[in-house]
Length: 254
Image (cartoon, rainbow, N blue to C red; front, side, top):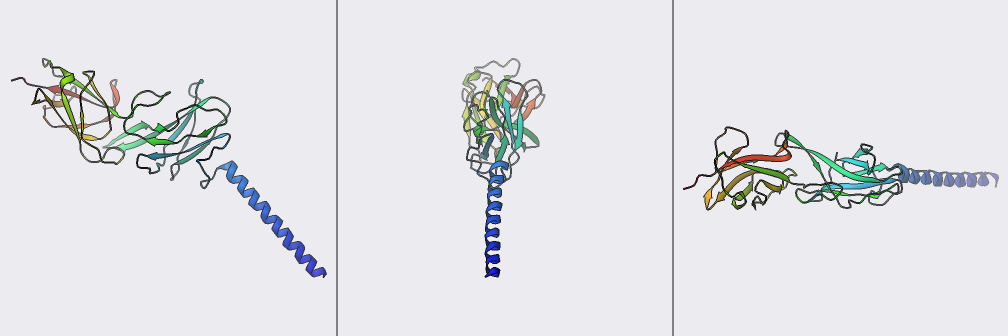
């Protein structure tokens, strides 16, 4: 009987030990946020979320910035994991979340803001902020601007036509910056100087004015004017613009 009583005590002890280990493991998952936790569930004191492209694929290595709404340059930051997830502890305060994605494309590196599904600010209660990579559209406040690129047009000296009446056609050459297939875009420069919100990619640019071709070359260059122009966006043109292309046009009247 004494031996059986000892065995029962050991079994009871092992059961208690197993329950303690399981409880400690669950608490660690809730507090430390390992890779297997649920980033879609709000966790007080933490900001969590996922980052994906427009096809729903997770994006790894996206820079998540949590910036104070009042005190400049007081941001917290982290990066997404292989499944596009992130988790960051947030102290008391008033905060906004942003996602920046650095992408190598056509020999250049572009730094792009990604679109927040919920752009609202938050406090220490934190919550969930998911992001998606959009190639065009208007950025929500507190950001400003557009997700697509800018094309700035300028006339060759002595050529004066109505820029708002030029019909531009952008035909994609190869995949866009996110790897997706682009579509032919037909647009006019509504302000006579810029064609806005073109998904960043490589394009064959053609145009007509009064039914006849318009020719293009790189802005501020001595290159030959061409009816079909190889348009490539740049991350920055010094003292001019970001995520843009600048072209000069020529049109010869009859």
